[in-house]
Image 1 (cartoon, one colour):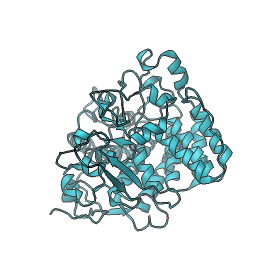
Image 2 (spheres, rainbow, N blue to C red; image 1 turned 90 degrees about the vertical axis):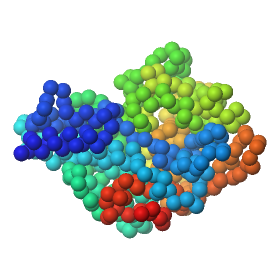
Image 3 (tube, one colour; image 1 turned 60 degrees about the vertical axis):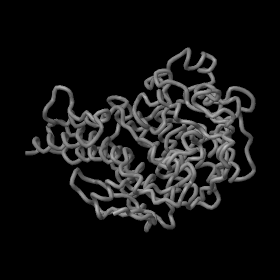
Image 4 (tube, helix red, strand yellow; image 1 turned 135 degrees about the vertical axis):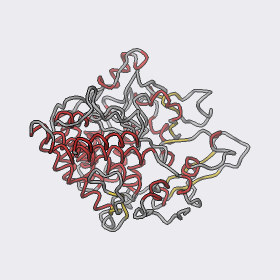
Length: 473
């Protein structure tokens, strides 16, 4: 019966997701019955985490004026203009991000639930379970930071979170947990996984110890557990501290001269994507804001190598915006996975928060040495903690591009008065036929909490909104 159940469950899991992302039956196998086969299930190329439900709430992304002016408001326009007058639930009938994250969680739960009863070596079973747990924790982390309030130690115990899925059950209707309970679950999975993970796993789609400790550091940082975040970041860097040298790459001619596929980017810790491995072929739609464009300046390899600011087709001329213009086959730049440079930035933030300002800036300068082409490479040490944190935050914006990192950062920093930001957006910048307005996003805006998709709310009556918006049923 276990074999039949597993075949059926995997078929259902595959049917509930996009074929591009889930091919759960290993080649040549009809039945999953060995520990090695379960371990193989962890390897899942092309995991996708679409950001379209919230990307325009970030102050780093921008929309073309023709896609806003005169258009019927959709979720993109509502987010871009910070419109709180609309109940968003009826506009979000479904969510690829939500569905895919929980589909992956079901996959990890299948492994965790059934691998112990499979044939094979006990060490392989423990490894498969550990790898599935670290990925299960990662997917819960993404979900709670999208659909709930940012972690606040004062309110996390009562703030509405998400549904924790800790077992394989396609028919489950779990109750919603609090933000604190979700983080407790995440950290429990991480700690249970770490002793069994490998420094060099079977392939790049299995989680390494460098990735696991990087993720552990990120969770601690989001909870403001600074000493633990620092220790985990240092541990991650002890396994992989490489930074891809964009300054040297620029001297070689950049992506037009030298292709850098994913396997050649030494700083990558996890292979995950917004939409799929070829997402950057469509990145002319990923337009960065004038604010971020200005932040890059004129001598930053991250901008100069990969962005186009002069297109007459993809940009509003005179808006000071730019778009990603590099094909995925020419350079792999992680957007939603983790990489070593994020770990350096976590370490720098830990130092800054601990008033170790010299150490924080030293870490930033280590990164900037591989990013800044000319002029001022080494930053000077500010006199205050807040100014140092601003340097760290700005470097995060320039390094952790296009995915959900800036959106998550705004949410977590908005729970602290010292670092909260009121985002303002002047729009339009070029069109003269409509009045120019200033749109404002307050730090406590409900827009930062994305509503659960209508399809999920209808299926599970126990799942309630984390905002005051109205259900259309």
